[in-house]
Amino acid sequence: MTENLRAGAALAVAAAAAFALTAACVKGASAGVGNEMVVFFRSAVSLLLLLPWLLRGGAAAWRTARLGGHLWRAGFGVLAMYCFFYAIAHLNLAAAMLLTYSTPLYVPFIAWMWIGERPPAVVFPAVALGLLGLALIVKPGVQDFVRPAALVGVASGLFAACAMVSIRRISDTEPATRIVFYFSLLSTAISAVPLAWTWQAPTGTILLLLIACGIFATVGQLCLTRAYALAAAARIGPFTYTSVIFAGLIGWLLWDERPDAASLAGMALVVGSCVLAGWKRPEPALEE
Image (cartoon, rainbow, N blue to C red; front, side, top):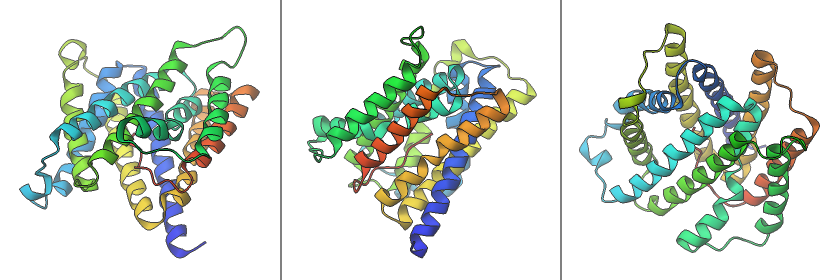
């Protein structure tokens, strides 16, 4: 393993741990406040943390002619967060995390339809295996054929894939820092709207969890961005799935969550198929 890959892999694993901790904070906070507040705090805390860094370059650093593209990216990203956080609150942590991390199964087809990027042939069998894995997670038992929360989790992966493709559409002129800035700004503004009728004063513990959610998500995004800068996305991507392992350990320790054999088999299929589908295809980093 080269020095850059070793450093990139270490940062990707650190990002995965941070994203798993983000999910754990979301699950804990969801017991006391609604999904709308969790999404808002995750976005607002991230914006506050990034604002000094992103504005150091002055007006030129955030001036853009692609506001429409940023709006598409923010809209899909916020929808993905709402769905992801809902799934976290109602499913075991590892399964919810993996349903969102299934984005490589959808990105090639969304990019094909939206921006005309034809997927390579290897994507088709990879997606077939991945969908089988998702079916095992979403339908773990005969008496539990379709769980609404699991379908919402699948939707979070689809919306996250749309957000990734929207990043690709504007990345030819927009640097990563500007994309992150506008996502944080617009997602905070969008998620603030439902607070007009859903706001409730959080307790001290819930407030700490909400703030921690934004901090861990920002740390994870910065680590992952740096990891992708150090090594090829195809080499770094597989390490990001350690977040499912971290989430599984946290879920077991804090909530005694124990996935059944079908779910474990589905997770293995999804991870393997996502790695295959994304091999040698650079993808934008996930926003949590």
